[in-house]
Image 1: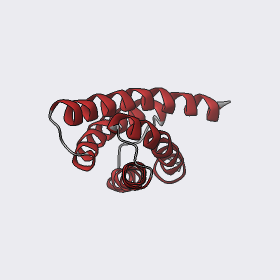
Image 2: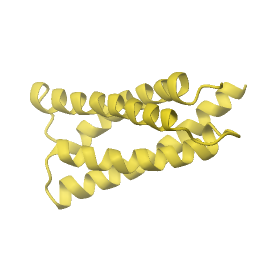
Image 3: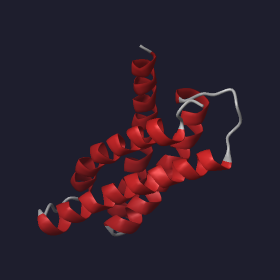
Length: 128
């Protein structure tokens, strides 16, 4: 039951992170006309900052203080997750010829979310 509760909390935080990511991505691509890759780098970074704060304080709450290795692990998991999102954006744009940046991002996000959850659960926020 604890695992399900934790997964639901992670996804609630994820929804907020996704909203931050999408809003920033939309602003950068649709209003400022930034290409996908730099827009995603910026928007994803905004989401992971929110994610770290909320996941450490709520989802994977712990009694001990944050450690440098935990922060490094979190950053590494998010780099892998971002890399997967960027790869999906590339495939959607260049191989599948999906024209709409927001639709490409809609496809990339669930893949990135799964990688992010399991990476954080298994490597970053695992109990000592």
